Length: 75
Image 1 (cartoon, one colour):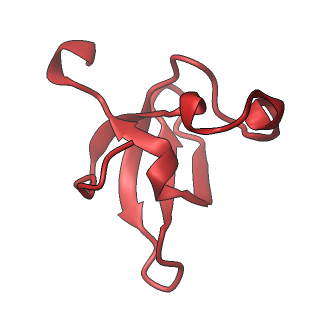
Image 2 (tube, rainbow, N blue to C red):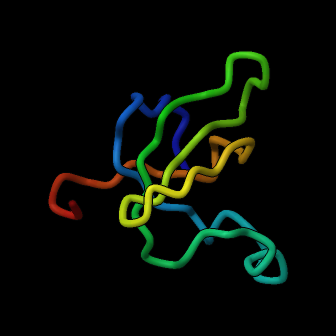
């Protein structure tokens, strides 16, 4: 987790380590999954829109702080 904002159209992963294990299966994201970060929702600060990089499935309203930008070597 980082305090720096993620720029739109960045490849990210969901940071499962930021959550207790008992909550992991309540999220639609997969360990090792790659998502495209579209940005924070203007009228829902702290929440964002991401899309699954492989399928294009959109997800909205999830906490921005639970996503981490991929390093260039991870893409």
